[in-house]
Image 1 (cartoon, rainbow, N blue to C red):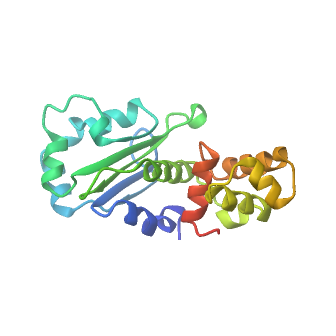
Image 2: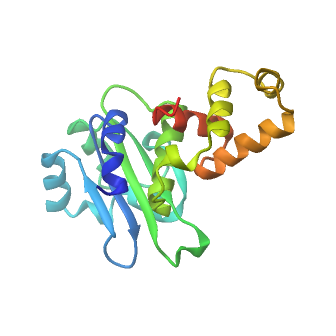
Length: 205
């Protein structure tokens, strides 16, 4: 099972209307991809050659990180976003991962739901998963994190501040910071709060 396949259930829960993930796209094809978009939309999109007009694709190659589709200001002369909504893809997010050392390779994903806009924690989680998949981390998360790091994340997820975590564990605040920063690095998270969200989603505590 590949890393992308490991994440399919979790991504599916976050994108119940459908999603598409392409990993390490070079000058032509991705090294791995997963298309769970509705078949009628894929057929329509392909038949009408919408990829060259798609504002989401333009965003992918001009940006990194993640954004709600409704926040993207790129021109959409063919009405790709509005048409996608007719196929049940009413609310979406687009993510892109790229590093200066990637030599042109980029990973991206389109995620959709039909009921509401994505919440900030959901965007953080999708962005983190794409970053992990892009870097192709082979080590399982529960082996990568130490018990001490997991405990610090667990307490943080309960709303505790650094001083409270330090008092609970019986260590210094600087030691707590070190554990949280270590977990953040291993999980490719942008913040320690995001690291706690990722760890919780992986049922590490």
